[in-house]
Image 1: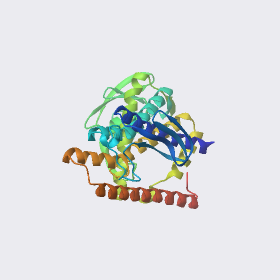
Image 2 (image 1 turned 30 degrees about the vertical axis):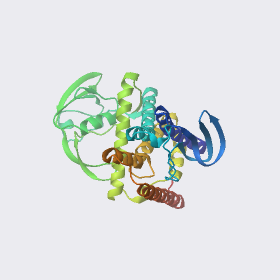
Image 3 (image 1 turned 60 degrees about the vertical axis):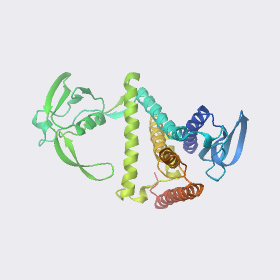
Length: 354
């Protein structure tokens, strides 16, 4: 059952991505010849209007084939009024960006749903504070529940921790003790910590740790919208940072996962409940959106780069340059997919696949 859910999630994410391209293309009057979920042999197809809608045998992908655009054969150009090539570079740029943006929008919607439905979160209730730092010195003690930092309401340990880590001086900490509200001015101290990439960093701390109480936290629609937007932005930033760390060697190439990893993790998430599945789906959707914006010729980002070049120079790249770079892009993608598959199979062989 989990495997089926994984395929449905991946197909849905791909559908949403391609739907973004499709709607933008149709908005600008570009004929969409094929809208396919999956690659390879078409096991089902139906023509509506000018478009053939298809479900193909390999469900790990999808594509929108626009008139005048063919990555498999870049020389097949068309300059008819309803073709992709006949549109202005800025219009093509919007069509290309619409797919990744659709994935980011989907992640935003999923984060809104998570906030509305409620999810488990660590409560901002402190354990015995570190006696050497400001919280203990000011008189805070185990069981105190932090409710506001500098006037900003906090409902989870993560929200509290983030506000403290962003502080640049003295902060006002409001907390509950015995049902009564109290307030203290605390000066965070820079201490060494580890980030998610295992790097040693300095971050402001007041010397508190979580008591460990977990509760269900939900938000109103008004609260959910900015929270979902912040979560989408934060996830996007973390993925971009992860790519930078991978390229710089901080994150080893052995951490690159492939389709098998995605299916396995999604399957596990589906067994943990709808909120966990929504959260993972949102993260994969952000990942799909950001990765497609990378300046690799075979991806949306590469085509966006070509159009930006045309907008600046007032001329399109030569067919030879376009073809060679597109082929190089496919080689890079094939290499990354091969690396991900190799890592997945290695983990399975070592018995460490999640």
